[in-house]
Image (cartoon, rainbow, N blue to C red):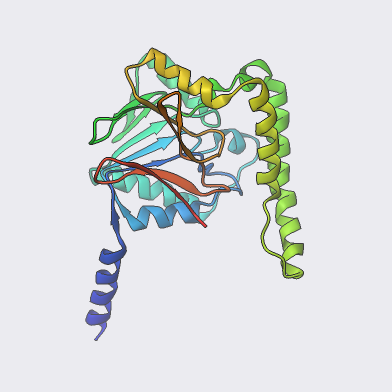
Length: 263
């Protein structure tokens, strides 16, 4: 009887498992309370894939440096990724502004490095089965606001983190009164990003990078805003994050890049 139940569970899992060629994730921010690592675990369990491309800010070394936070889901995500790499999944880890400390290793070696079966790099060129060439990097390279105003960026980052804490209390009160969840942090971030875009259009800066490459498209993370857009006849992809929108990109078996956002 137990054997039949186990068989049914296995059959159910095999039915819902979605096969894709590649998963693209970014901005998981493991090591922070805002990270929704549990949702990433659901994705890693529900999808079967050949490649896993991590587009920066996977582990938030900046946050861990100032205050240590870690839970079981964070450890499970790390273990799952390592297990996938050992089982033959091609894992590429691109560095972001919150794990930039590792960039020193790349500069010191003067080329990309491998930790076990995982490639660590700053930039990566990916080609779909349809032949679309995609230039991938985290995206902080195009954020003039960070480069020109580092102090204001730190201040803004602090305010963003504070908004998450306020948001948690605010939504507990909303729940008491039977109101739906509303993201204060997402609202504030949207307003801040609009102000920055007035001076420095992040998307167009990233698209301009393609002039230096032989690629057709660009894929980034960094601004926690998932998107698939056409800009100046070039494809702009943003994988979003696993803090608020909980989104990711994937290439299906036909070579199409698609976006998934948790409801």
